[in-house]
Each structure stands twice: as structure tokens, then as C-alpha cells.
Length: 163
Image (cartoon, rainbow, N blue to C red; front, side, top):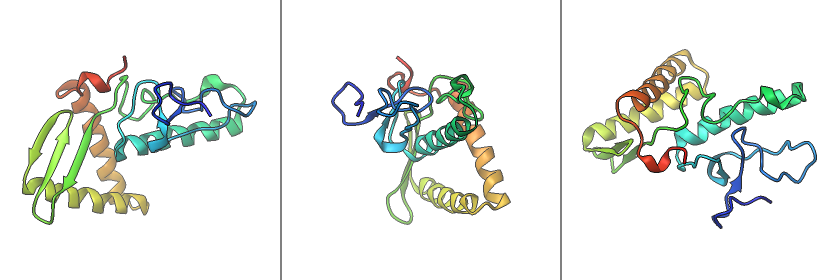
């Protein structure tokens, strides 16, 4: 198995999320989420794991339909709302029912707003995963805002950009 070369134990993948040095001839093994180590780095968080899943799912379908690998999606450039070489660093941590911390590209906001935000994010994500229109609209808008703000106003720290 191809490790990421840094002794971390993560599986090295290319920008299409295919395993580097794949043990099968057609190269059809993909890795995503906490086990994957994409070329530009990867924070282990829900937004990025879900994004990896969308790219890998698209590439698995493309692999099944075409043998031309030039039509593959690339992480993170081919994500909807993202044309950059970085992913935003976003976290919303609950510290109980009435307290929490929001982290957005190095900016930290503690307090009750974070707790309310965490509740809203969790509940709308469940609605989105159920395929309901309200959840889908909320998350389409929220993802677009996150990527836009990350590429224009509050850019991620240098350590999570492509090196």
C-alpha cells in the first residue's frame, strides 16, 4: 500500500483520489476521508471528507463509464463553488448546550452563537442527507458562501494551501 511518504500511515492519493502506486492494474482503488492523504494536504474534518466523497464518487462513475482518465474530477479544483487549490478550514465545536467555538480559516468565535450554529448545521445536514429540498437549498447556499468567503475575504492559513 502506498503511504504518503511522511510515515503518517495515510494512503497517498493523487488529485483524482486514486491510490498512488495502486496494486491493481487499472488503478481503480480510491481513498477518501481520514485515511487519505491528497497531494495538497488535508485537514481531517467533515467538510473536507464530504468533498472528497463527492469527487471520488464522480470518478468511480467516470471510471465505470469511460477508460479515458482525462475526464476525471480533481480535488479540490472541481468542487462546486471552488476554483482554487485550497480548502477552507471550518469547524463548529459544541461545548455543551449553550456554548461552543466556531473556527473559520484561523478566526475563532466562542460563545452561545457557536452552540446555536452547531445545532442548525447538524439539523439541516440531516435534512439534506434525507434528500429534502430545504436541507439541499441550505447546504448549497452555505457551501457556496464558505468557498466564496474563503477565496475572497478570509483566506485559509498558508499551511493548508498547496505547497
